[in-house]
Image: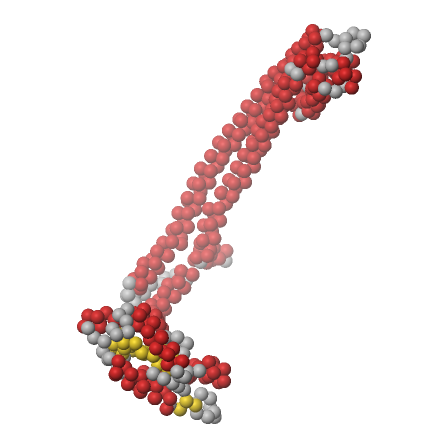
Length: 424
């Protein structure tokens, strides 16, 4: 039973695809997880070391700068500044206090403060007390005393910096080595993951796309017009059902072609030529008339007050009225004439090789036929009569282009409607 289940799974297109996709994705997912975790750990370690170095050396550099402000500020400080502890000297002292606090709070200082930093802080505290005592103290500080104290502070800070630099170089090297190892791991896992993925893709191609290729070739033969061709069907899974569907499709295409062509050029409601095909036929007739120097007429027919028909009898009855008018127009014109449904209740007729007099006579005859025709839209209702307004334009008298002919026939129709309708 398990063996039979496995065979059925691999006969299924869905099963083959699922198996191939999982096989291809599994190593890539594992690779992504391993690589991401390893690489992020190395980056976090490296970032931590670099950040500590940056913060520490910025603070120490600023501390050196502020210490250099002390001697000139001591020389220029007035007695009043010593009385109130304000001025450049005491501003520099407070800045140095803050910088020492920042350095002492850094993570590097916590680890290496015994390497000169504590000595620098103690020396600074002693110098600070002497400077705050001012020049009037029992043992006033001299410029020489201050310079010597500052030198001892600088030396102590230098020892701290040297120690931190040496130790962090080792940490930075270890972080870089971890990053290098991570890159090598990513490269190795990527190679094997890619190898497994390519193997899975090949297997998936053989299991799925080779049968699909055969079906595609058969479909191309059907597309080329060989509707007698059939796909060889030896599969009981999805591929077999696809082949069966193609065989059914070949039998339906020919009948559908006729229906498609009909709906492409004909109006679905009336069966007349539609507006898109009308432009093609009008262009053809215009070229023929130019070539042989023959006239032709363009007639536009509009049902008078058609909106009232829809409102009074409903849209279903309105559609029936349109079909009746279409049948009447088609019956009363010549076989060479083309009747078109142009708009909602508008029709256009192309009448080759007739002049203005024949066109007027034809228009009047069509108007009269529609007016005389009794129409019963609903069972049991009284018969009614429709009327139409007709506009006419003649090539080449009313225009030598499609645009001019349509513009003039529309204007002629509007004139007939403005005269009260039921006019030519």
